[in-house]
Length: 177
Image (cartoon, rainbow, N blue to C red):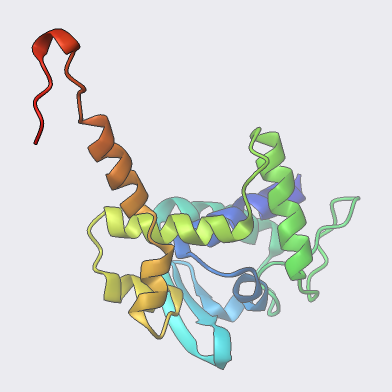
């Protein structure tokens, strides 16, 4: 369905660019450059930034744009129950939330929020070695400390460190330290 095609592209852009719901609904067709995957995003405080989406996200966007067509207007439009794309109309942040909840529900995941995609994007970028200043710029954080609060790697590192521990058996003797 066209709604499914749109939702796949929506999920891909939110995940691949770490956008907020308000940022994704504010995107217009002219804010996206398909060959490079460049997005011009209007963030908090009306600050404009550019970021890019990966090849797999661009392929989902290509599928959506083949349905949405290349008419000026909102990048993500509502799709009515009959499957008609309502070009010229903008999705609401609540409609984005509902679309993602449908996708998460079909995947058997019911505890994710759209903002979790943003957190995951930040942690994934940091895991892949992208420096924190670059990640902060990608997600529109003016202060790197804001980005640090999204970083979930510390908990994983603590869990991994705990898993490397072995408690000796009593027969091996436990020495005090």
